Amino acid sequence: MATRTGQRVGIWIIAGVMLFGTLGAFFLPILMNDNANKEAEELQALQEQLEQQQSQAAEPLDGYSAESFDANAVTELKVETLKEPSGETAATPSSTVTANYFGWTSDGQIFDSSKKGGTATPVPFGLDQVIPGWTEGLTGAKTGGVYKLTIPADKAYGSTDDGSGRPVGPLVFIVEVTNVE
Image (tube, rainbow, N blue to C red):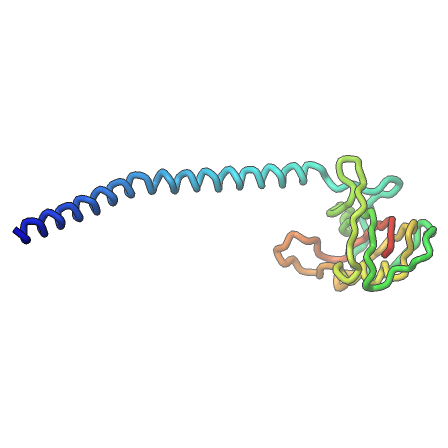
């Protein structure tokens, strides 16, 4: 009698395992497909966001333009004051500066700007968190000033492509300082 009960329990266990295995084999691909669909939708949304950002090309600030220059001639940092500042607080290497800006490469191509879609939006940044050419070039800058920074490659992102998408070689920026803290 105990053997028959044991056999029945064993059969029920085997039947249960087979049932759960069959159901799992049926539902697992469906669940995995749902996750894959969600991931694909998220990826598509990110790609659309990137395309939208890229469609709003970086623009020069009003009154200024990008021009090509001889990359070999840029051997040291050059800072030109294009508009005299009105503020009294001078930026230090650890100051937070808020500015409108645009930058370009030696072929005259703008690669970054705080102006997109016709609107310039000032960006705050710590001078200790940017490329050395900005830290050195904007130390002493004051609110209201507009500065042209011609930066050699060794004080920018370097002279070789590291695959990050950052520009290589010397760079030029026009920077309009709107606040110094």
